[in-house]
Length: 175
Image (cartoon, rainbow, N blue to C red; front, side):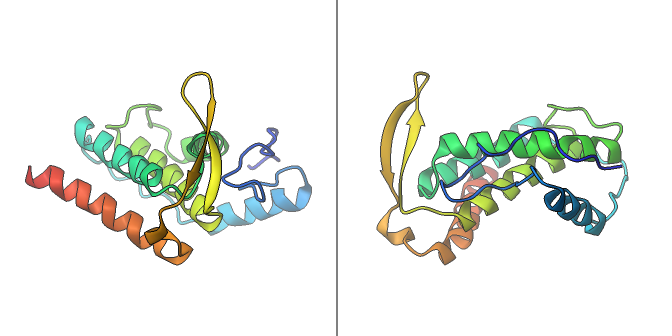
């Protein structure tokens, strides 16, 4: 069963003009219920643990690539990523009862966390910015960031991200 969400995602932004969820009305709740009904059923085959160092490399290489491409404020990205994980966790856990939250070597948890990361990346790419302010450091110092000129076109962001992440992973494998 899917209950209407209780948290407010009004702060979940990758830009000042949009949010990933508008969960404050019944229509949004119905859209969510419909979206979940269209997802394929999980395949619950036993799989071996993922080598932890490799799993961390996969996650970090993608995150660091997003940060290096400068198309979204990373403080907003982190907040969006957290809220997305929070929003999706209960449904995922119900479908994967043996999942170990936080254990990145658990293949089911790795599926979940990478799904959440790439959903957040996709959302932020669709709302990419050329210039923005982001908070950095423990005290939240604000810095202005401008996207590099060679990444000006939003349409090249997914390809560029995939290529850069792939290059990092291949470098690790062939190291």
